[in-house]
Length: 90
Image 1 (cartoon, one colour):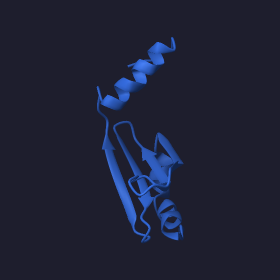
Image 2 (cartoon, one colour):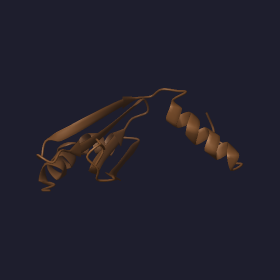
Image 3 (cartoon, one colour):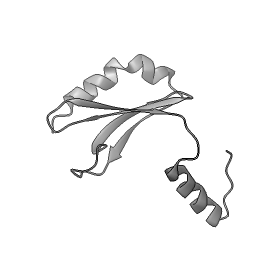
């Protein structure tokens, strides 16, 4: 797959990238059922996060998330951490 659109998007979003509280390139396992498959640009502020990936056809896909509490994934992570004797801040 030609990653040029994702690389161009990263450059275009440089101002958001520089001002974000969290940023990075992530990789999702390549599977047909994975909307985060392959390379992703991730940018977050205190309340929101976006992850941008690329479809096989070369189009960009933007996933948007808002801060929330008491999610099933968060609860699973907390249970695992507690079972290992680790503390965390809510």
